[in-house]
Length: 158
Image 1: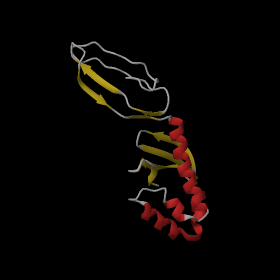
Image 2: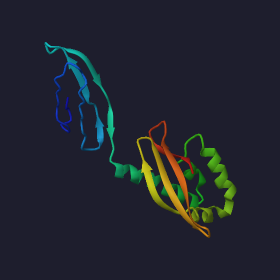
Image 3: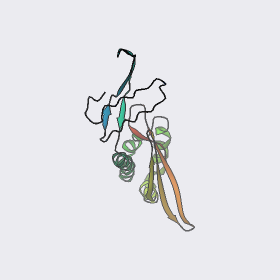
Image 4: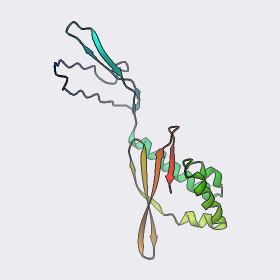
């Protein structure tokens, strides 16, 4: 069915149920596609509705970059609690404690983290590769973000 008008209605005539149906979504949003199986008389004998969230990868990329940038900005400003709020519950206190222990050197430490080199995304996971220059050459580190239980992106490993 096509209540949103975003995809075309498609029907498959099959007795084996081995045919595949593709439903491309061309715009980000939330959709509720449904499928039904009808008997020879046209009576629906089975149906299922699924919920599909379609995202623009560039939007996700921007969100992940903003979260990381905000953490760095908050740490440089000494606002540790605001920075820690971007972390998952399981690691928040560990990183908050480390940032507090850095004390007056926190801002300098943040300056040494390096620059974002790349971001890898999937539905519930993101990895930011940060590269910093050392006397021995460039060193890459990963910052991992996950989609937390409330649907928000949060840093799980820094």
